[in-house]
Image 1 (cartoon, rainbow, N blue to C red):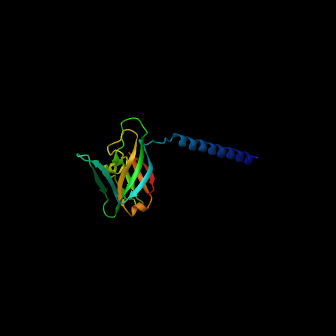
Image 2 (image 1 turned 90 degrees about the vertical axis):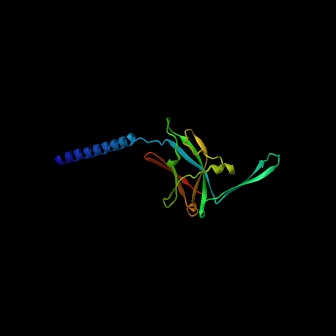
Image 3 (image 1 turned 135 degrees about the vertical axis):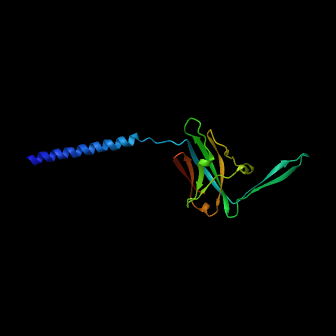
Length: 171
């Protein structure tokens, strides 16, 4: 009889401990806040180019039209990776998106910064401003990467303080 009471007591204690443990775990999970990044970057499209070429018609002073070629090429062994991004600001306040916070990372862990890509407008790409962004924006940015890296999946990395967001870039 005594052993039956002890078994019942310990059985209830085990159940109580399990129940308290479940409440503790659920409570811990609900206290953790999902820290939001200042900006969300969405990769909408990407293209690999070994060169960019275009010809513009330019009206001359005499009324004639001259053909003006534009050519841009990356360094030997490299390609341009053009990425169309949508940048959305998530929080109010004065935290602009600064381009040094955004890098492209290849499968080997090498990082690449955005190049001076003002030339994109010559090829009819709506270029995303290279200055700090303060409002929602979208457009194209350019990275120069080794041609070998362009064959693999890459990640666009946005660092916001101690938080990072990785977006897959598939050429």
